[in-house]
Length: 321
Image (cartoon, rainbow, N blue to C red):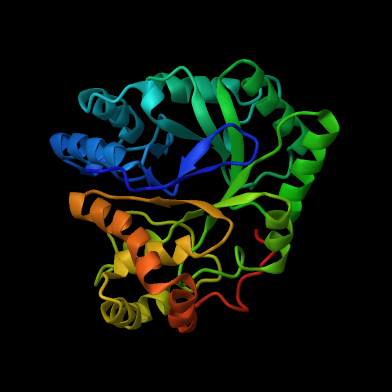
């Protein structure tokens, strides 16, 4: 497959991110190994060279989390060298050690995935009130100094807390967060499209769109049996009810619902990267085809067509959690 996915520079981080990246949550542990190898090879050849891989569970989790370990075997079998792809790792605030910082957690994650560094780390949701943001920023600066990471961001943080991180980093003369992984879809738009994040984007901050198909709810006739993400605003039933309308809009555009879901995220001016999951080659191909859909239909036309599907309007605070 010819490389067709464009790349963009992530601020001053020296990283160039593809417009699309692939996630690992509930992915590789549900796939035939040979198929996963072919899919990763095909993604790389198309220019999708960024993979979001995390440790999604604890030693007590049953069944034990293995998707990141499987990923390490998949890339080897696909003949992909470490310098051929970007690794995005998750760091969980629940595991932050006040004395040792993030390093033990990251080293364990890198051991599991078979790498000596992560190109990007994304801090999980801020659910602890006993943490000092300065401690987080300085711990990440130490990881950068040690060559364990190249850049960092956050996952579903509020605009106010992100602004605080940026201010702390500036005062300490260390790297600030470069992007936020935010829920963004035809259904969930209030936070990325709101005024608080617009102020951050105006400063060069970027977004990575995630949960773009609501865990599959938007593109399947029945909700998935596996775990899906949180439901801010308790609007999932409303989202499910909108699925027929989404399918009709997609058909009118000569596209699939999955293509339309991904294409919508690409219409946001500050979305540097859209994260998606795929367990079939056809799903990977549809994701790539979403780029062509935006070019063929136009961003404004797509945004106008899906406007009635905006389910969290006036429900979720645009400031973020």
